[in-house]
Amino acid sequence: MSDKAENASNPLDMVKWILVFGLLGGLIYGYTSYEEVSVLYRALGAVVIVVIAGAIAATTLKGQTFLLFAKDARIEVRKVVWPTRQEVVRMTLIILAATALVGVMLYFIDMIIVWVVGLVTGIGV
Image (cartoon, rainbow, N blue to C red; front, top):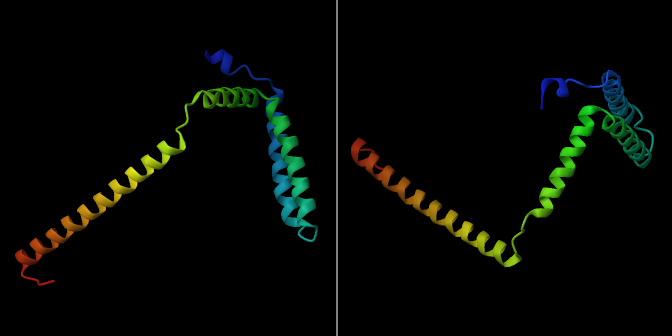
């Protein structure tokens, strides 16, 4: 993209972002200030405020860019060929066996190094 296309944001975007952050900040303040109110009502209020803030943010240039990115990512995830259960189990067992083998090898290498250092320094372990 050119610099002109990236910087061609609506002047109202800054006001919208201030409003979004104000809503979210007010949500945090209100949620902690009204502890005597039921958690259910506070959670419902929080969901409503987050949805409103998200809707406002989605109308900005950056919000629209993020939504486009999310849609493209969702399309790409649908193209992925996911492994079968048998493949996942087989690969998991291979990784566990390889990890155990490397762990045992490191244990023996450590024992040999400790033995050599003990011989060189004369300190019996």
